[in-house]
Length: 106
Image 1 (cartoon, rainbow, N blue to C red):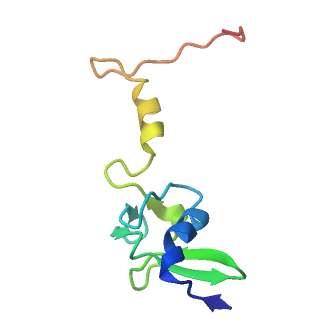
Image 2: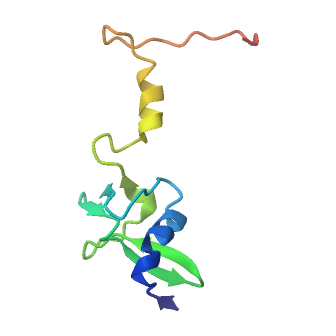
């Protein structure tokens, strides 16, 4: 059975229900990869199913959830992951090929 939680608990439920990305406030935004709409934490549909939060995209007809929501801007990765990825590129824009360590500990 679904039950809609009180509004005051919404940020906590977003944080518990979305284990893929962090929610700092209800004004944070994500882009739903299913419907390609930008949504805020305030717009996310939240219900409780057997005491656990179930998050859904608010777009009519969309069945997207936290798995399909990405950060705006560089949507496929978190900022930390993107910075790690950027370290693979040299200043001149060419990819840097990581060198194998031949099984030796560094």
